[in-house]
Length: 155
Image 1: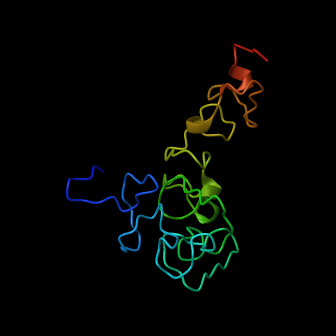
Image 2: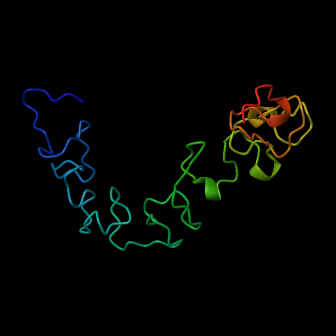
C-alpha cells in the first residue's frame, strides 16, 4: 500500500506497509498496544487481532476461542493445510480433497483419485518412490527420493 499525499502513516515509529488497523482506532496494529481494542494489551491477549474480553480458551492452547481454528483440540501451530479455517488437528479432511483422513492415503497432499501404483498404501501424490513399494517412506539422505528408488546414494 502506498500512501497518497493526504494520507497519514498510522504508525510513525514502526514499519507497517499495509496500514492494518484491526480495531479502526486510527493507530496501526504494529504500534497499537491493544490492536483489537478489547481492553486487553497485546502482550496478555490470547487473540491479539480479534476482540475477546473474556479470554476464553477451552483447549488451553496459545489461542483464545475467538481466534482458534480448532477450539476443542489443542493446536498451538494453528496449521490449516487446506485453508478451510479448520485446523489440521480437528479437520476430518486435512488436505481438502474430499477423502476423509481415515481413508486418505495422502492426508496432507490432495489426491482425490487415491492412485497408488506400487500398492504400498502411500498415494502416488505423496510417495517418495511411487513405482517401488516403500511403505515407511525411508529416505536416508533426505533428498525426497525414497531409498528403493534412489540412484544417487550420497550418504
